[in-house]
Length: 370
Image (cartoon, rainbow, N blue to C red; front, top):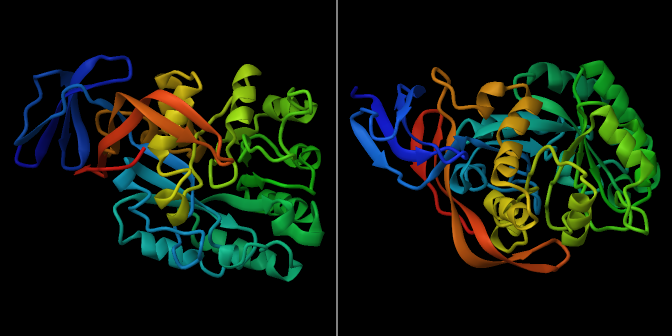
């Protein structure tokens, strides 16, 4: 029992109160509230517990300014036990990202940017010489345990005069490596109507609620036919809030027309963490609470759904015998101003506030701005 601690009087999303007992880094017991036994007892009365939050879209390689941040600052400090770096690094630097991550507590996986230079420059797909098939394959082979997909940022400022061609190349790389794509959308060209037909089941469309002209809705506010086709094919819709990619008016259209998100993510890095509009995963989750989604839907998107996409179901459940990766949080009744990427404000009366994590069996408290 010396290596056992208890999270006492926590509650599931269903409001069921439980004690959760951790021993030697694993979930040892889930029992009736007040009955867990251990050397150290943490009374967490009134606090929700879920499997550890997973942020499927972050930028965690601080050497690449401005799109980078310290791993634990956007991970465990924010109630997030697992982050997925969304293409900060290509083949030239992916080993450095993975090696660096070993010094931090937050679990890290990564999408490999199909450009070998990654976000060393923000027009990384404008020069075809930076897209090297051999280097992509070598990186994937070497780091298969950490690389979960390939990243292609398909917007005008990134691809330059290359148009849709980098996505066609990415599609071929995906076929050869057997890894799905995460595709960033933004200002066109390429047009969204040219991008969507190239996406397949299990590919991720990120920034899908952006407010740019090249978005998923027509001028009357209805989803484009290509959007409905993509949903039917099983394309995975990810929020990827970011500094320029989440619009309340577009999100309200998405809710109105039942365009489903599978995962809610931040696209966080140091600047939009410190100065907004992202701040934290909790802040982004609070925006979806304001939009009228249930707490269960919201938490499911950063636990079960994200873990399912990663093909690591153990990260999305609380099951005896699993390594303990857990998030503790409250839903607080307080007035809060929420801001999207375009400066639109919404006044909310509730916010989600992380209180702590258990990451690979270690209990840590956290403080974060929502």
